[in-house]
Image 1 (cartoon, rainbow over the protein chains, first blue to last red):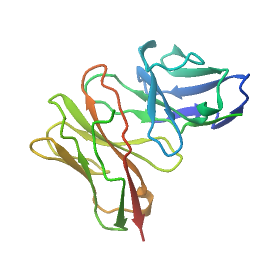
Image 2 (cartoon, each protein chain N blue to C red; image 1 turned 45 degrees about the vertical axis):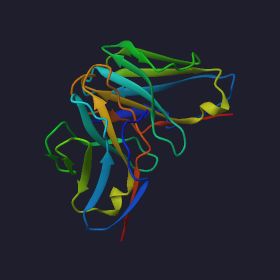
Image 3 (cartoon, helix red, strand yellow; image 1 turned 180 degrees about the vertical axis):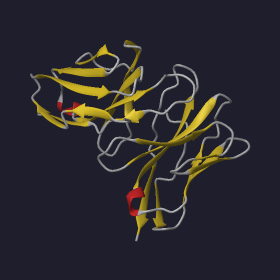
Length: 114
Length: 111
């Protein structure tokens, strides 16, 4: 099974809402990632978790709060977002974070902030 | 910032080989060359990677020049389903070496 699943596929939320994005993998990977992709732009790294610990935060605003409850699950908690945060949010996983490795990406959650 | 330069777009006839170039003139000795692609509205898909030697797998071949300053991804028999944005990425092999996506090449395979 080389699948990374993400839920929901689409999410519309207001600026005062609190919502969460969920990502799951069952490949035994110990590294998980969140990326943000604006329309017609390449993906941009947000967070990296390695062995369930946050190892990289690419200066992401605090209204995005990641969580890794176990090695298979990665959440992204959203609060007080702005319309410019509307984007495709991609989750990925890999066996490791050093050396040569492949990252497996999920299909993404399309987020619209109104 | 991305360390690679790719043409913004290319066309290829169905059934022919697609050759996608990538320039990475500032690559250092411990940096790998990776190729991913992203079909419209899907997550990126890993294709292949290499360090010094040419590589081949069931999807594609990767040709890296001897000085490692450029590479070419070859899709031997392009199909309509290969239409996508192809990203060439140079990544450090260390623990902080993450994928930094550039603008990529939009490959259009035409019948």
